[in-house]
Length: 322
View 1 (tube, rainbow, N blue to C red):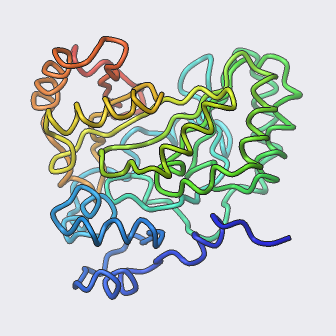
View 2 (tube, helix red, strand yellow):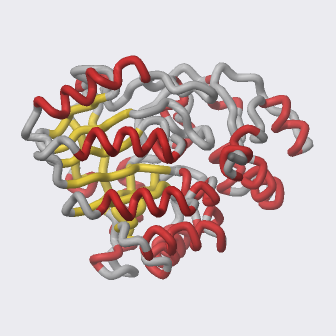
């Protein structure tokens, strides 16, 4: 069987600062953090240039070497009763099926723990599934990682087949950057798998991660269109960041475009206090002022929830009420 196009895209991606610097024809700092940028995305980055939102999100920067911030700012480890599971809220749990991503975002605290070649948790799979079976209060499983859609269709199906046996699960959710940075991943096999899966739950949702209008192109639109066409609810989450989207015109354009694509804005995250990403942080007051302006420009149903993950693992709070 031929290798799917999206897998070839990952294999051919830039995986070092040296490779990426050569392609972009610039000097880049050597950092402790890994690099991973698919070539199609790198083409868009090069076209937009060093001052663009794309470049700043995915190209290494010397400010990542600053020591301020935390490796695990939302304290996932404190709420991980078993490998692969984060159970912070009573009725739902994160299912961390892989540490791989289709791209490494420079602002993400998980770049402190990501691998680019191997899944990390295969040996703990049964332990995690048994935890979900034993905790009947859990109604929703949220596939996360890493990025769950970087798993092959057969690997995803093996997880979904096991979850189907757990009668108290009602909702299924996938949080993924993949439809935006690697839209070819939304292939026929994945669509068929998700279409079959959604029949077994009250709701099956894909939450795409997108921070700027420049990330959206016809291929991304088609990926979202195909998901929606197969009965999958598609929401979005974004991170509010200095120099990326901390501008009322940029934010308005992003959310209006998502709505036009049939994607409902869900979360707008205040940036985490993450080591290696301090240069993306803006003040809470600046974020609140932007969201106040957004409320005058967007319908209420198109306005994402502005949230902040409290340090210490307490969880999300409404950032407008702080």
